[in-house]
Length: 191
Image (tube, rainbow, N blue to C red):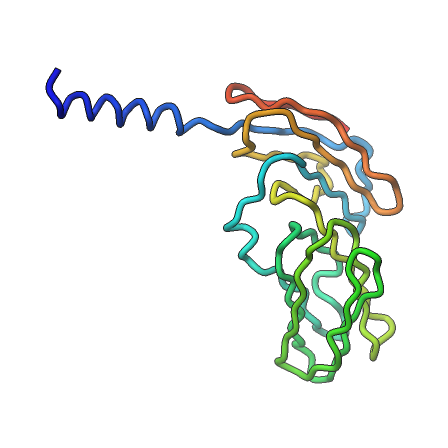
């Protein structure tokens, strides 16, 4: 075998052994609330977070004297931006144990931000408009999704190995299950 053939074989082996390093996790949440305003979130703990996903900021705008969206899930380490799109000033703050902050008063077209550095629920308010409220759920992984009314979820690219999958609903303790993700087949989970 000549040198070029050996290099080609080595390259082919390295591509085939490193290309498949992740599996798929799918599932369903039974008894999903029929109210689409009630958030239900599922995330996978264990795999390392995707650095590219952490660099993308999450927007919680102030529009029409409301936060938009009123509920959002972010990965620990992500930036949450609060742009003021109203023609009035706002004063965004939180007294939550997960993240306490006061962004001060800021006018139309200004924005302030925080880093979501601890997992948990952040209750966000406006000191100038008491009806304005939002929630930011910080999870310890970039493998997360808010479940729609179907109750179904699917994650691809999950590193093979033993992990935990967590179901979160408001005002109830999280439910955690152990899962084993393989390179072949699909890991199926039901809550």
